[in-house]
Structure formats: C-alpha cells, structure tokens
Length: 292
Image (cartoon, rainbow, N blue to C red; front, side, top):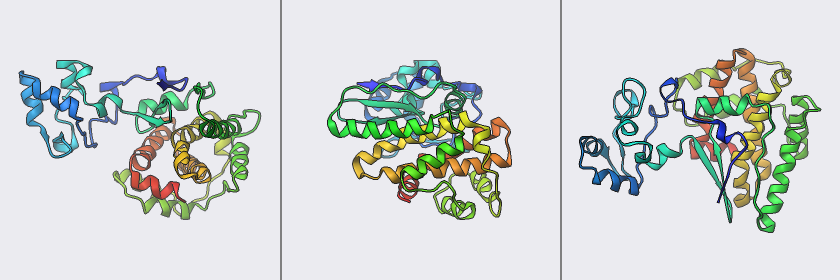
C-alpha cells in the first residue's frame, strides 16, 4: 500500500521545458525486468538500446556532457517517443520520487533535486498533510513524534524563525549555526557540481539577517517539513530523531544564508535543487550530515 502527500498529484514532469534535465549528469541503472524487455525488442530502437548498455549493474553509456543516449536534441526521450512511458527503467519511471518504507505501507514523496518538484512543494500555501494507515505501536509512536514536529513547523501564528527556534529547543539543539563552520562541513562532502562549491564559498566570512526566515515563511515551512518527511523515517532504524532534526535545521539555515545573498525566486529555488542533488542523493554525504 502506498500513501502520498497532499501535493503529490500536482506534480508532472515538464520534460523539454526543464533547465536541469535528470537525463544529464546521472548514471542510469537498468533493472533486470526492463533489461529483459529491452532484449526482447526486435526493432531499431531495441538494437540502439542494447548497443548503449554496459556494465554490472547494467546502465546506459552516457554521451558527451553526461547526456543519456536517448535524450534527443529537443530535450525529449526517444524511448518514450518510440515505445511509451511503460518502456522506461525503474529509476527513470520513479525519479524524482522517493519512498519511506514501513511495516505495512510505503510513503511516496517528491525529491527536491527536480526543479519542478521544488516549485510544487515550496510555493504551496496549504499545509503538508499525509494520511497514515493503521500501524503497529512502535510506528504509531514514531508518527506521533513526527506530527509534533510538523505541528511546530506549521504553527503559522508564530514567525518562521520562532518555529525553528522552538523546534531546536524541543530537541536540545540550537538554530544559530556558525556560518563558516557550517560551510566547511558542507565543503568536506563529496561534491558533483562546481557551481555548488562556488555558492558555498560565497558564504565565507559573511553574516546574514535571520529575518530572511520570516520574510519567506511558506518557502521555509515547506522546506523544513520536506526534510523531516524525507529523512526522519531513518530514525526508526537508528533511533536518532535528534540527529535528523538537526540535519533539517542545518539545511534550512544554510539555504537561508544563501538566499540572503540573492533573493531572486528562481535563484532561491535553484539553490534548493542543488542542495538536494549534492547532499540528499549521496548516501555517503547523508551519513556524514545526519550523523552530526
């Protein structure tokens, strides 16, 4: 059984209108069922697909600029155009979705590495909601704690900065990070895009007005709730709720500092996309940052 946030149905891939195609820069692994289907295609596209697969696990051979070999010059997928969406491998079908796994159901969310997902989630005025099915006592207690975190972050009677400070205090944390120290922590991570490095470097020896959080409360509320929704479930396995909350607070603080240097909305949203791509899609980076 799968359950979805209330914004989930608002999302659809914008394909050729996307400035940062997920068909560029990502290794695309092919699941066994889809590989078997490709092997069965006795057509020119089948021959082209098989000629562009290598390795174990099997994956597409990326072309110049790390482009998927089936991303055409119009920014569209030749596999979809020729065979339909059902012919995509699992990773292409699911992206940018992620799943939180529980005993009797799965939560499906949208990852912020996708620019359209960023827009769908951050500009939404309605509070995040998701309907949780009946579950066992341990999970029920977890969801009670998670909802209490959501309640703090979604308390719109208070300024956003107060909500962050309330959440930090609830878990014995602080929402007053030293920017240079925080930047160094992120610079120590594996980094994929030098543009992200440049954005981090810009923050060195800078101070910023934390009023930025109150200036854009909807964006920061939705961002923080997203971080909790996506990452807190790991605490069911390691018990470290506090660490996951701190991870969410650090991400919001860092992005707040970055936004304060350039409050252009598209720039702000692109910084969120970069953050997600650089941090959330590397297990090594997640382990380092969520363990702080």
